[in-house]
Length: 316
Image: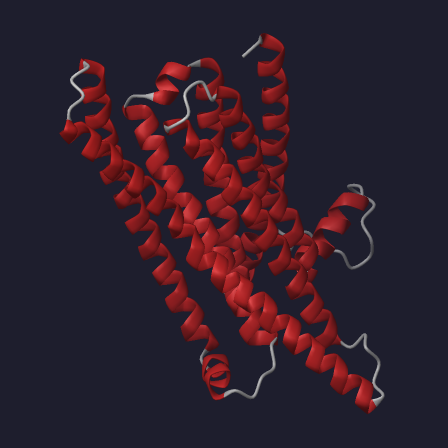
């Protein structure tokens, strides 16, 4: 990779990183200060805050990974440092994805309106359901990290055998085993993807029924319930498509194990990977009334010229 390409990558990567830190840091600052001031927090704010925290950690991991990729490709491709980064990346990535999925389920159960007994049972127990999902997300993230440790052990053994030139039938068997495990590792992303897709369609159906009821009753379509449906759908859809993009980028970066000389492909995948945690934070801000109002007021109100009645996040 040429010097110009390196600098272009670093500028783009740094821009995404700074925007992601600003967006996620803002969410943590506003919700954290509100939590500290009121001594209580809603379930949605709890999920969004922890989602932002996980993405801050994820962005730092990706920053270290990107810097090593550009300036020290040897350390990036092998060694204990890269294995540690991969393990933390896997844990944080899955935790972030599952927290976003928990948020989608919470929106669906709180806003959606269906008469099916199963949906009503879940809706009446929404707090318990979502809390159990969060605990399950933490458990699955730990399991995914542990499975990666086993995968890295196999990869280290294969690299050692291949380095000696003693390629036997046992080596080919182990290599095929590693490829199977590596492919199966990407399937960890399918359950949250399917759950998010289900919540998206349920909210669409609920909104359609709600709009039909409003038309029959001659009520304005701009009521709070309709707006809540629309905001939730926008957030879930944005997460869904950004996650698909992230999943594609993850497959690209993972292909470096099998494709020789794929440095540029790996770098492109890295840039796209950072785009997901960086951009989705601003969608969450715009979809949350409290965060959006605070963001707009901080953006347009200069110090000493705040609007009457405005209180900052640390105001008593």
